[in-house]
Image 1 (spheres, rainbow, N blue to C red):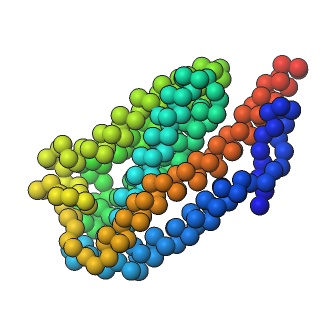
Image 2 (image 1 turned 180 degrees about the vertical axis):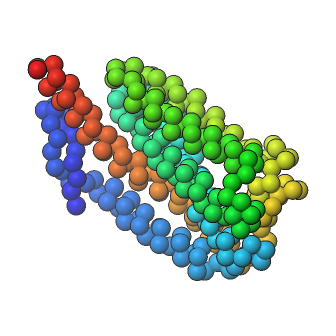
Image 3 (image 1 turned 90 degrees about the vertical axis):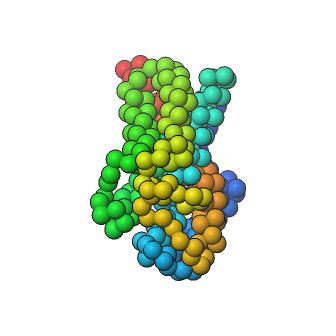
Length: 250
């Protein structure tokens, strides 16, 4: 199995073998997806109150924690870039944003699908839903603002600071159902707010399905996707350097 990689000493792009670790992570990701979907959609029992629609939580909840991991990588990448000015940390940061945003959007979409039969609406301005939407928009703005800065070093410095500060929206989304008594969003683990709509009953196989999904989506999935994205960013950096060189020669 092969992919492209960057030879920085010659400023060229060449075809090289994919690292064996990444190959292994890819296989584990595919197998993990199959196993977690089986546990959630075929092995776990049907929820007593919500019926079959409850099964969407085996994707909805884990993808949020996957986004949490990816956005955390953006914070790490941003801090290390500001400290060391090494381009590889900027590539980690932008990979974290793109992977995290994709997982956050899956979380929002699956939540809306769940809300339609349970709350009789696709969307409500519940504190948890609102904070999740703000989080996604904040990281979408990261990508838009980043693309609008032409100077490479300025772009990377600005993106590093922005990515660190943006993590506050992730923390808010994580804790808001614990600190806001007016939320109607149920808490899957622990006691739900008194006015929560769509609370969970004890159902056979829920823990067996939910815990592996949480572990899988919060570790293997974001790490594998970010690694692929970093490799792509390596190529894009070299292409941009070549573009600048050609323009300067012309």
